[in-house]
Length: 42
Length: 419
Picture (cartoon, each protein chain N blue to C red):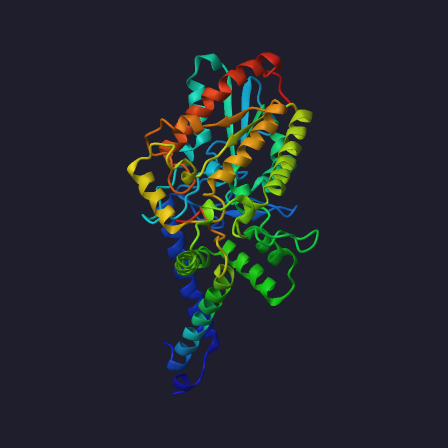
């Protein structure tokens, strides 16, 4: 089993990846009238 | 006691890998159950070496199906035209591709790849006794967000190798929406106001951290279904927020404006209208068109131009269905600006282009008169056609091109395979 410190590290790594993803997508989206997925959304 | 205090990195790595494997496997299974095909890519586009872009052949989507070369067809085409074949190539943007745009009533039904203008046209031709014994091929080279510039490049560089007999150009709408808005900052750089141009610059030429991030995310979303799905979900959420902010800002600006820009004379239109520079827009558009025509002449391809109308261009002209009426009224209430609803100028440029093509003896398919008696729902949103709209348009295109096809068939030898 994992201890609390290890769980915290895993949580931080996952949160970091998603934060980077959100920042990256936001940098594309802000001020852009079109998404790179425009007309191809699901 | 040791495990309670120390950090075991091998375990952390193992858990992360396991977690990723579960999420990746789950996403791939979900994609397969949802789409019926294994995951290959959620990216609709790919870059081309000349700086342009094209439909990603690996795109995995339940409705937007591309064939193995990125055409929006379920069927495949050989480079060399088979004998006894009439091959029609259609180039255009989202109206031809049959993309959809968000509406105040939600996302419209996405037309299936077998119910596009091109597939309907092929089915109609196959049923016509005048073409009995002929193999009919209608290729759909629709590319979302493309203007005539991208279409010209894609046609000349790549699509022309299919040696079609007829080329239908669906190229009026997107071109006038954004052309002239921004200048190239310098030669040999992707046009920054084109979303794919910006992405290309980042992925190919930007050596900063941002460029590295672009390449990192492009690679991870290519190989991992989970990261690709996460990317799309995040993008969707942020786009919604962005759209809400943009609409609110636009409403605020419009409520402050005392004069309707649509009614202003050409010279007094603000920078909001790219079509203010009518001569410049006309010259650029016609220059690209003429380049295509010259190319077609050398390769013995018969070009035809299809003129596209926005829904608002037909307000008071077409007897709208309830859905189209509600959509039009919404756009009018929003005072949507940006050129595409500026009917007077759009019609002015249409007439000039039609006159230019008449002088060059190039056929133009203009469905304006047909729209005046059409009561059914043709539009899915502000521009794109519904499945029934695609069928309606295909039938009208066929009526226009059939005499041309028959006369051309007599002029040239369709049976001879081209190389």
